[in-house]
Length: 304
Image 1 (cartoon, helix red, strand yellow):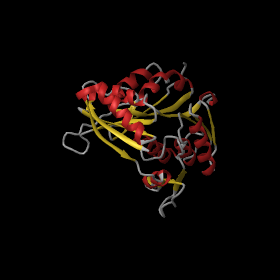
Image 2: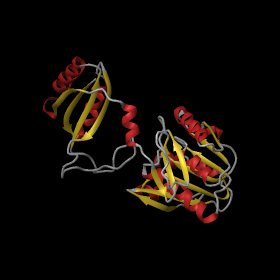
Image 3: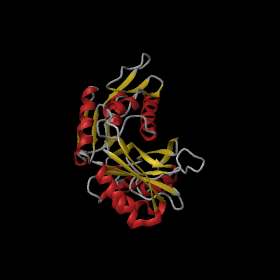
Image 4: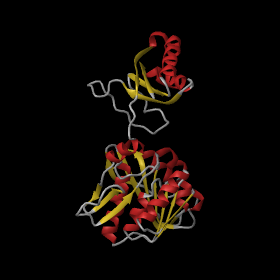
């Protein structure tokens, strides 16, 4: 493989990316901050696929495209530069060394402590000696390793509630389950009747395999597999789908049941609370690195 890197202003990055994706031999395109690692670096926070907050954008972007061969990369560079003129500058065309991507991924994902004694441990590691509760995990292609703040906030919330009350409610729904990590975490803290559902078949497969590896009572399936009422409903997704799902998620809450939402940036907390207000009052239950966990109890049966 060969990587083509172009430098352009932020306002041109999307058009350049789209053009490169149409080129013969193009495998993927990514946009990075050209000033990353310098005093001019500008961090952005937003949901995938959506524009950053108004006024927030990298001033200079590196558009990096992978091509199957050097000739394709060179031809793509020539066409892009001819069309864009001085607005785009060629940075490099370089071969990409062959790598053991599985090994690199595994090296980046090690045991993660959630709270004292409670660990998420990938299948290729041994649990730490002081671990009393362990989720053995192979995330596969699904989201959810315990290292992201949203996942960690959810697991901490489950563990602390179980610590206060002795155990979690028996019936739990993990909506948008990814790797199944939250459903498994609920099982380790006392839940006995758990549905883990996701739109992505790969996530469903990963969740099923992880549930089996942890010997937990977790059923997996598509979203329509969720049925009836639950004492605890978990959804670690993103703010936009969470707003759309408000009636559905609340319809699965039993009276007095708890709703726990994550994947929410702190600046999105008020709009999430407003979206759910017709059914339930939500408050911030945890914060980490710009993310917020929101939860609330249903005072009565929610009706969609």
